[in-house]
Image (tube, rainbow, N blue to C red):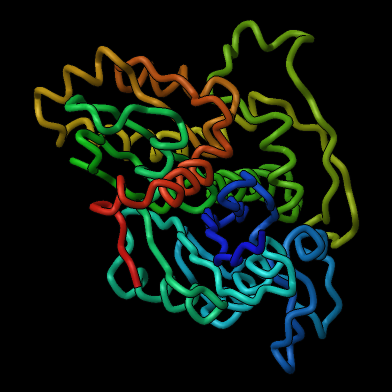
Length: 344
């Protein structure tokens, strides 16, 4: 029997560091860095995603690799539109006859203008209908938190560009805080520390690699002074001589570099706890805080958060994928979540 094909439904986690795409009926079909390489003169897109990320800091003069999103919001509209179009094509297949329905996830603290920019970019990239869902809500759905219950649940989603903290009850966000400090600021803090302490310049890819290898939110300096301290040799350009040079770093130094940024992130979570209604606050103490997003995977970050807030914190399963899974689930059950979704 002949079946009439219908338009595909896609959920997109448009992150500052990575973009993930969820195709309803298939699951996560794409996970690529949010990086685009363009020619300087014509502004023509040369590469998108992983291919473009490999070009960061390595491009010739006529090509520029850049991140079109900054701190969770669109910084370059035209390039974001081209990137979205590329991701939608890749997820649906080039020969898409029916335009897909697209749901994009955005930080809860963005302005109306920034929301409109995301909707417009999605429509221009080839969507039939565009929906928006707030990041903390999508992260909570993806972390399998029963958000429809009349009880308080707290989620802290720490991505690349922004940290979203929210208390959710009865399927909606009660209090939220969005600060534009997250994984990218940790990378910048590492690069700044190395420049200041060793007079060595390192690129953002190297800084991110150091964060993954040596990043630790809580280091016991007394015990770690011994041979069990994690060390790593890094290479960069000497700021004085201009020549390549290598230095050895350990996790105590990196902890010193990233501590102020981690405290800023925890400050955003504390702000939400301070504004939380008393009834919901007691629920949160019982259930604890759920952490999601790539930066929450930093070693011992949940222990530091527990120590600073006095509330038990645990990292969600598949922390990196919580937001895109939640966006996909909301797209599958659009009637259930329509109160919390903006539409165009």
